[in-house]
Image (tube, rainbow, N blue to C red; front, side, top):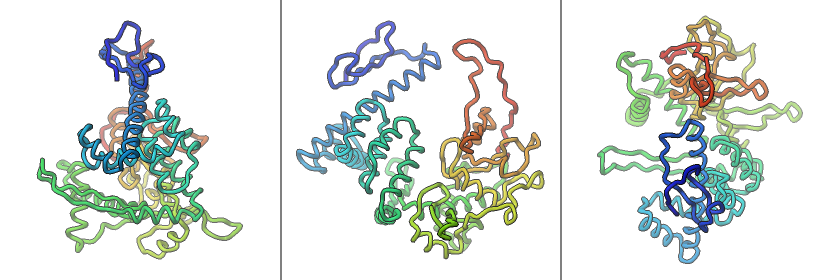
Length: 408
């Protein structure tokens, strides 16, 4: 990589093709304090392209080392030269070896068209079963990471040839858990990976326990979300006699094919496809909730009768929104927010509720973000307020509400 003083009028970052510096990425020193918001955005975009190009160079180098010697030798080099942790070296070399067999993904990464995390996601999917690489690369050029993850899941299920059973079995086989003590802090760290069904089941049980603990807290002395999650997990493991909090642990969704008179397109509430055989197994469990709603059987329009969403509403929102509409966080760990705020006369109706995580909930109430509804797709999203003082001109926009209470 070449570092050089920035010249007047230069953007601060240029690719190898523009600067003629061979296979390197040229990055200039630049004082960003004088840049406008638009300039900072542009600068960040260029840095993202440079990161992708550097990641491609690193992956090529690691893959060549693994080819000449072996995977263990490449990991050893990464630990010695890059001073990586064993875990980081392992994941980097594995990703490099997978990318070596994906020409379209490698080219898009080297050109800066797709971020490194997107490329790794495609590479990992290729190790789990058949994929349409070029379709995923094109999607990676425009989609966010969460959107691409959904695209990958859908494609894997469609191309699996066995209703996704082999992918599910492979993920279940790769489950792992590790408990260790951090030598620096003395704290114990629990690290675990589960297949999507088990993970969603655990997430639902944990979220129900967290809500139980939240209701029992002193409103003037509440725990942080991280503390509450830790306490909920500890109670579920160490004090099973207290029982799991009342609630729905896992929501399964399926469409009904009226022609064949059978369930089809089975999935978990977050949209993860589910093999039909797994749906049959899970349907017999008592804490599995079949997501079937209509106006005659479920009251999803409560008006001003109550402020908090009912269990039926919360589950219906999980099925509709699948995750936090702002950032894609797990719906189990999110809130049901009134689009038209309760204090302004908003109703506790399904159409006036949306799923948001704690951080996005705070953005809405404290930083004046807005919930926007796309009538074409039916989806909601959280958008930031317009700039009060943009680079050019002025804006007379003012927030319609200011409310720090996170109960709407």
